[in-house]
Image 1 (cartoon, rainbow, N blue to C red):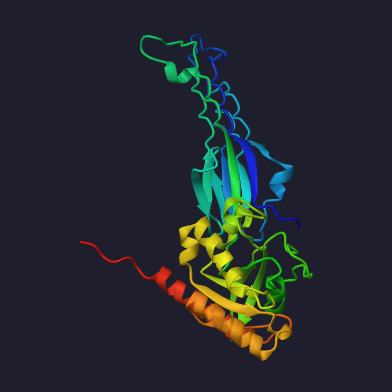
Image 2: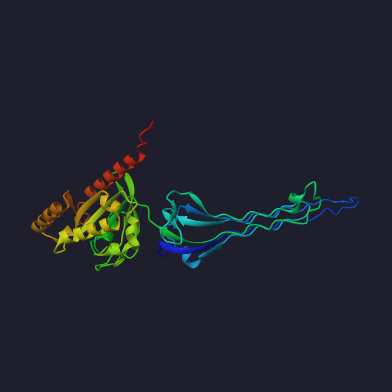
Length: 341
């Protein structure tokens, strides 16, 4: 299945049906009064977050969604049928954005969440409603209200507990394949991964979801390379695992490039808990490992794990550290707000 995380849709709710002008015409009833029924309400357009989807690719092939209009009212006080609603089934983590591409209308982060995007028009009143003491035979009825037409953007931000960030070819896909059942494309050249991949990672009998984000480069926060296209996917993560290619000539510069882009994209990303790991140590000797690890620890100001996605060395320690950060973040989220008198 192809991955798509941004698309435009055109929606229109159904118009209400017109009211009916009708009079009783029955045998032996000389002066039959008005009996025109009301028009039916138009169908509405909804969006609902559903389980089992992780892409917006379906909306590439169908972008227009028009709900049915209500039927006209009929004689004998019969109300027209209400138009059928339309429901846009979107993945969990989808944002509904207005046409200006800035105003967020809704953020669907849980399965079953629904949002009304366009309400159907009300049906018009039949002439029965206009009967009065001075007008016993009204010959007027209301037209139904027109539907609402809108242009919206759907933007998917994958929901994962942890995110993998790093320069292209830092070994992120190899790491994800080693610790989960995900099978991302792996090759020895930059930008092998062009779409985010999700994997369920298990450690010590506990599980969490990890996202492999395509490689970032200098200027990514301004749209260079894959740019801001995929930086949004790490916004929801509780912790970031920053992989640094141990075979690089300047691991500190590689580290600082990613940190700078995360800070420039959003202040919240720069403040997220981050675990740093020196990857590909299977290709280095002990002296080089110690030297580059020390340089990274000095630059980051925190412990640096040494790992190898190819040989699985050090992976369990990193996974335990990630899970500890996720658990700590969940505890903070579940704490009740302080009581205020």
